[in-house]
Amino acid sequence: MNPSAPKPHALACDRNREPILAVLRQHFADRTEVLEIGSGTGQHAVYFAGAMPWLRWQASDVAENLPGIRAWLEEAGLPNAPAPVALDVRSAWPEVAADAVFTANTLHIMGWDGVQAFFRGVGGVLAGTPGGTLVAYGPFNYGGAFTSGSNREFDGWLKARDPQSGIRDFEAVDALAREAGLHLVEDVAMPANNRCLVWRMQAER
Image (cartoon, rainbow, N blue to C red; front, side):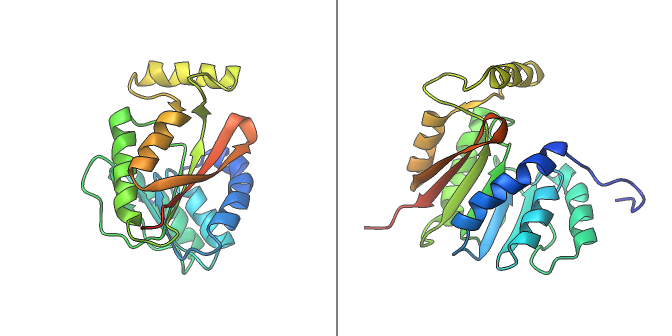
């Protein structure tokens, strides 16, 4: 990446990072290795790794987004934030050691086949990990209904851009999580009609 070029920047990351951090501090307090899926600009990776130095924060995204993420990480120079890895949820996942997974604003961007692949992959990463935790941030519908007019408008914008995308129904997403061996432990209301959904791996019987 051209070192003189500006780093990618998303205002939403500046707005939502503090509320998300409050959730992560609670649910990642006993975790050590986090895989972030869909790191986007890289802003969250830098902020959360800096705020939670006990975690090794592994950023990942599709290959075309890695240069921007790498620029943020290299500038920050954090010892617990290694170089980002390429990860497409629909393809073979890289071998990554993690006892927690985080994702923000991704499930409504990918098609439903991608959402299904996401949960299969997360289940594989966290399988056999005591207390393996998944936190997913973003907008969700409940009972098939939008939680706000702004979410309805956002869903229309998403579908106009890509008919396969859209705000997901919580119940459908939770069913995929349960199939992957995860059970919901908290559903946290967030600003701007978003949620933080927290799942943990079910204890083996």
